Image (cartoon, rainbow, N blue to C red):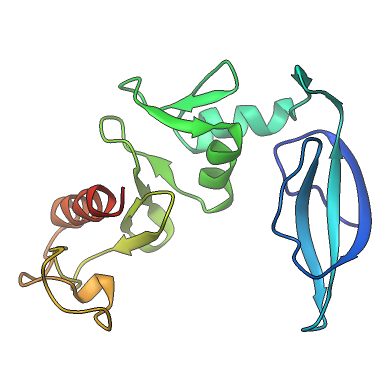
Length: 172
C-alpha cells in the first residue's frame, strides 16, 4: 500500500512521468516509486477541494505544531516569535526531516537526531555541527563544502546555530 507523504488530503494514483517534480492546481508529487532513468513511476495526490478550499490532513497539522515547534495560522506556519516560515508544506518539510524551528530566527532549525543546526533558504540547506567551520561566505571557492566554508572550528551548539544563521542569510 502506498502511503500519503504530503500534507494534503486526497486520492493517490500512479503515473509514469519523465519530470515529476511539478505541482499543479490540485495535483502534487507524493513519491517516486521506481526510477527507470528515462522515465519514473510516481505516486501523485489529487487534492480534495477546490482553488479556494484545499483540504489538509488535520493529524499532520498537529504534528507540525508539536514536532516542528511551529505556529499554524491561515494555512501558513510561523516560529514562536511570529516570523513567517512558509506555507503548510514548509511546515510538513520540518516534520519529515525531524527538525524543530528556532523560536527567534526564521530559516534556522535544530535536528536532535545528529545534534546539528540547519540553515536554509529556498535555494539550499546545510546542517552544521561540532567540528565543522563557522560559515563565512567569502571563504573558499565553489569547490569548498559549506561546512568547511570558514576559518574557525565550531566547538559548541551555539556556534553551530550562528553558522546556520549565517548560511541562511547568505543563501536568502
